[in-house]
Length: 489
Image (cartoon, rainbow, N blue to C red; front, side):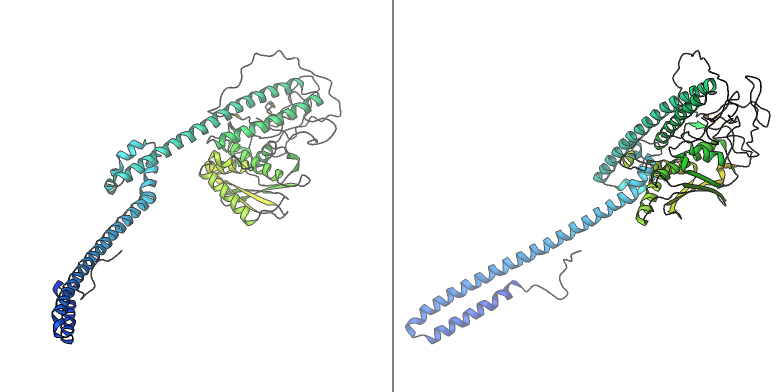
């Protein structure tokens, strides 16, 4: 701030005292000149000296006047500058307060469901000091709120459009899955036909995962629900069935825990995205190792690949991407991002309180750790299956699912060739106490294979063997090459 006060002890001299010195000097000079010259010239010299003294006095008086006027103008300019600096400092403080305090509180109040007009009318309710804001600040605040409200409305509309498109695709996928189930029931005794149906079923599962990803990014949730608890091993097998390179996944040391039915689909989807990311960014001849261990907060699923290791900057950037996805993904942020699955995982983690982190892998690649909280686990028996054949728990469409296409009933002509004796009819599921299936073969045509509990074995996805149908062709044991792992819808 500029000070305009005069220094202590400094005073302006009186006007006459300023003019006295030049007048005295000129008078003395004139007197000396008159004394020196001869008698006839003294009168002329005296007159000239008097005129010169008068002129010098007048000139000195004008110089003093202008000097004092300039000094007064300088003082006024200093005072004006100080006033302007004070006003600028006040405006800066008001803008800082507007940006750091008033605008965030107004935005938070608006996003509680209030219109910008209501926010402006109730500023005094938020803080009585806000009523002292000037009209320019209020106009700026009103304009900012209107712009943000318009952007939020456009974003919500685009997200609703995304979710609506995803729901329509999910309805078609679900209908396609039902029709594939009927085809497998009618033609599943033919190993070649059954193998082709499994390939179509696997492609249908990939499309379903993509539709679920679109729904999650748009603010929705996966479109399927599981009515019964499912073992974690079956959950991870279900995640394998939704990626392309499922043959490269190696499951080992999976904790024997069960996931709640309402939490099965989010875990499957998050694990599938991480598995897909691991297989995409690692050499095709390497394995992706998956383990699951119980920890204090739940269960930790570790996915390790042998791809290119992440640098520290890349790891921080990806974790920042995950954090921004948890806060809410802007559709414009993922337009040029090849790792779409990370945004989906971040949204799922934010919605279901899961945690994900990336570390360097012992195999030279990346190790992704997904923490499933204990709230998503249960001690109830995992009677449901998310993969394989003879599943006892079928997923159903979510509460906001759309109906699929309504087609006219088809008159089917089931094919039932004679089953070779070399074909195994055992269910291809893990032999666990909670989900055990008794392999059986009926000598009579049309007899059904029953589970260990005695209940009918219901078909629930690719790879199932209703009516004693082969689960795989006779050319290879287990899951054959070229066939996706079994899954249920």
